[in-house]
Image (tube, rainbow, N blue to C red; front, side, top):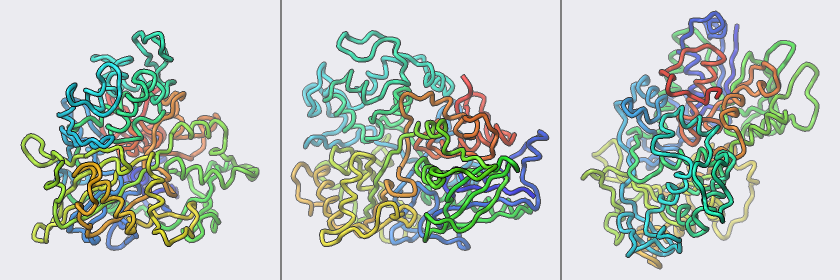
Length: 595
């Protein structure tokens, strides 16, 4: 009897089990590793997600995806307080999220797929000035002192200009091109004599903030940072990846989501797992409220030993288990918590502590942890459509875009979900993601989680709010949100009462355990192609063959997307278990090939 253990019931964990159950193989090696009748596959998770009637939980399924419905009514309007969309695969242009699109098709969810496009003419509120993208010009510049007319362009102009130092109209275009560029790309053009970076410099070893400052001045950098909406896009990360990633977030970009909320994909995956396991006679064991405490490889038996802990006492192990193979379907911080349990003492004889080897630790640090904070509000009217500065949500004559509106104030971006309830006979309820902040202002909102008469009583390491679910906003936080929403939609210094009191308001603080990040980014000075291939099975870095695997978006080619989680999981099954690829990967490698 074989036993496989997966730790983490988010995107990569569920996908791994699903593909272990439905994946096909024709090799002898693959058949030996395939799950058969009587075998066991385990799924552990620190949280407890609301998968179905039999497996109820404290919040919606999906780990860092979290759909929240008004009054927790699944037929009512909803907001996404985590990941919220995907890019539909386009066979003609060879662009989009190929694996997510295939999963949605195979789960018969494409009937629920709807447009979730960004506005082509977003509203900005920057340095106390309200303006639309289409209004920015030489006669009406953005309020930044940028040389060479940079303030007469949109905030994305500076990003494009910096990118032109290394990329051309013809290269890179394909996914393979970009992976090659990530490894070998160099600056192609001469910079001026005052520049730090020169023609021929290796792009992956340049921090993005560094080169933005160098080429655009501090004012130009601030404009790009403030106006693109995502602080995470302009941190000092790997420039070779930043050049590609920032092209995804231009105004007018087309996305899709699911009518029941993005979490429904993970409900469908879980239900498919249950059915597949039942049909094949495989023992599927789901154990929520259980944390992976520590993990070691047993070199004498080629098995994996691990300790688990309860949600109530997550730092104290309460059982020792053994498995044939283990998947850490976790982000970087969660993996580090596991490694810490065995870091300061010798591993028992015959075992190997792969996570604490220097080469593995170095590659784990290749992913930058990016905290995120989201706040959702529901109203009984679309007050923003009657505001002085209302968002322009029409796309091709249809009111079907979600914004966002962008500001340099701590709410950063506002996303307009509107009335998306399935039951149209109910009284309309309109939702907005009233704060879509990453990195820079997380601490601003954290101090508003408690009212002024409250002191903190829980240390942050024990505050697992992301596992508990969306938390009710205190009055002070709501007032602060209304104050900043009023400035965006009615002008500087506007009275916060112009924004009505919300019917319901909740937040998700993704800077807290166990994720400590909304998403991740590649650090500079790493060969990320090598990291992607080897961190999946970290024992490769110490010339051993141990059955511990790492999957998830953190170390993927599609960071911050479900696609990244699925692709890393798929690549492990293809390369180490001989499972046939779920889609043709000839021109769409799931992770970087060896270059």
